[in-house]
Length: 561
Image 1 (cartoon, one colour):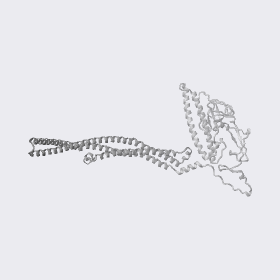
Image 2 (cartoon, one colour):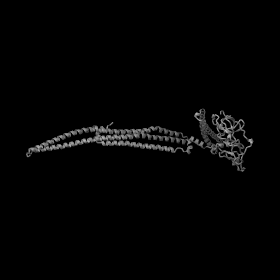
Image 3 (tube, one colour):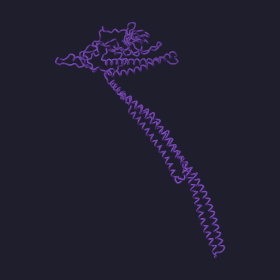
Image 4 (tube, helix red, strand yellow):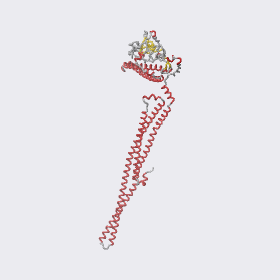
């Protein structure tokens, strides 16, 4: 390392320049600190702009259905990676502020103080040197003056001594003056010699000790500044390098998102989304007008689902068949939007129904788990009344049972609608809800009630009876069929399809329902059709409806209860 004090001979006239250089160096370090501040602001603003951009391009609620395609999913995944990259730019800004800028600003303050201290010391030494040189100059001038006075006094003495006209006293006076002047000259000479020796000594110390020490302090200041500059640049590069693996991971994520885009899959999704499921219509028959109007052409029409049917055919798919009406019970729990769903193509309707079935099953599972927990809690409260009142749990169980019944009712309706959609896709028609092969939705899990009386969640209305509507064939397809009262000979004799046991007592209050006692064994005549009621026959051959949640059923076509 080159020491500045070793070059003091070359720098002796450039002390001010060296001081100016150190000042510029410190200002440059402060300038680099300002650069890092601007860089942090840019990185922070860039990160905020990226995050704002990602937020603005997030799918809206009405657009969520379009983001099922792989291209849209790839775009969403890419947005996530961009958001993560924005976070890394925030990390760069934060680490630069905390690790570099604060340290540099502190170093700048320290360097300025040290430089000021060195400059004060240098100024002091320079002032001392100037003072010594001034004293030397004054002593030298005094010596020169005394020397001239001595010479003039001696010359005057010689002239007086040679002049015969002067008295002895005058000559002695000039001689005395000459001697005094010579002594003064000798004293000033000695003083000048002493001052010269002092000046030379201090000047030697100035150039060999004092000023090298000042230059050494300034050198330390400048080298610290340079070292800090180097460390700051390395630190900035290190901060960038630390986030490179995460940024590279984000880039890899973008490449993965791009690799997940599949045109074949998107094409399949488009087909699944927009296909109707209707059968391809048959060929249109040729109508020979020369032979008169065709009877077939007058009686055949094309339905909205591209199927050719007879104008005289019954809308239920059969002629003269009876259609069961359970609207009484259905109206107890409200109506559904089945008519609106039927306006959609069966394939699209099926996809929505499957999704809805999964949602309802999840809710049923959640409610069932809660019910099991409440049953266990009720048993604990029953065994130890100090822990709680079991009646509060019973109320919760009633509410839970009502919720489960509604969910099961809704699930059954959706399953029936799903079967209708599948039949439409296969080109067949249904005979009604009772043509389904689906087993009954399991009733609510029983609770171990210690002779607890639980009120019914609802009772069937007067319309909920063993009634059926019959439709006569109509000639005009635009005319709606009119219901009429069936003959007693057409009354349906329900077969026994299973057995059941009453979990709770039930008191019938409306026509169409029957009462039952707890643990009463009965025969099942008709499964729950999604309205929360099951048709049963008591041991006294009395038939009617009871709440499905109040019984435990066993069907003969099932292996387990």
